[in-house]
Image (tube, rainbow over all chains, first blue to last red; front, side, top):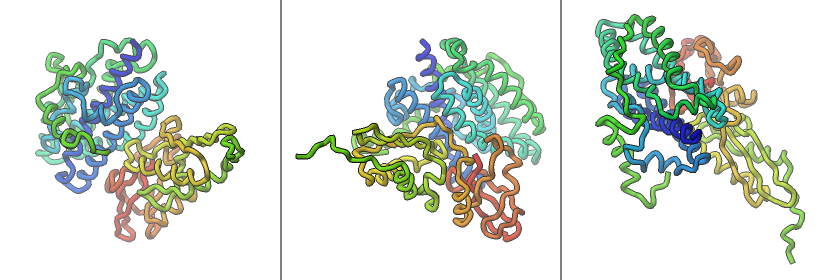
Length: 253
Length: 172
């Protein structure tokens, strides 16, 4: 049971990182300015690296397929990412607000996991934490600048926050196996993570002159963790796996 | 008659370290993996066997140079007469820029990359991203332009004194 719970945790973290990494990479070449092009491209590379490291633990420790197979040859319903990361990049305000909400959750998750009793994950978490700090710093800078910018930037940021809020809360969808993780001191659970996240993002949103949207429990976008995805995941996977599928035998990575 | 169990003395640890000096990070070709602080364990073969295991820890988890570095380590060290050299990557020791040796920092600056500042308690703060010395004119009147640059390990800065952009190896 414990192993199933750890695998579930690793899969959802890895799939989140892979899919948000792919979405970030869609800014390559079209960022609103050169620095943002570089930022989203670098964050994409980081995230995909994190996904790979997590898939490697699944492979080495739990006998799952190798990282490339897990990333490129699984069916949509076997992905455990939240629906938030699947959403198209939209306009820049959407992407920066998503990055802000998602990366704060990731930083806190890795911070919690750096104390995990599952040693391999704790070791990786300590390393990843240092990298994600740069992602969070990037997001915070833009949320503050745009939140206190022009009438248009304020309006866009608030409207993106309102739009993304219930998607973001879907990050914390609980697993039925979660109690095993809490009991074994592997991970303190989604509720604890959500509470710490709420406190953190609330302080930054307010310091940026923006309003924290009201939460309506019935509107939170759940499902991803159980394999129910939005209409946007399938086309993303088709595009991401196009090369692998076109050259099954000889492609080397 | 060749005796397979004959005494092929395994090369000394120093020989391995000196071979590792030839292995550079392809993204920063002036610094070796040893100076970078990437090698964490060298496990010498047990008597009579010739299998060497070297463990490395990557500077960034998603660093695309890892496979190339593993391959170069294996090639360099195989030359010392081992039957097999296995290069493992793990995070048992996590790389931070504090692992970089002082001589590596000097070489970085000569190469045109500002070296990372030393992190206290291995924790990054915004303040530590200020006060970085320009590798061209050595002024500290510089500013962070982007925390992300041409590779995962670089940030982009600008020097007000010599009016030039430059890159910094990120403290991490």
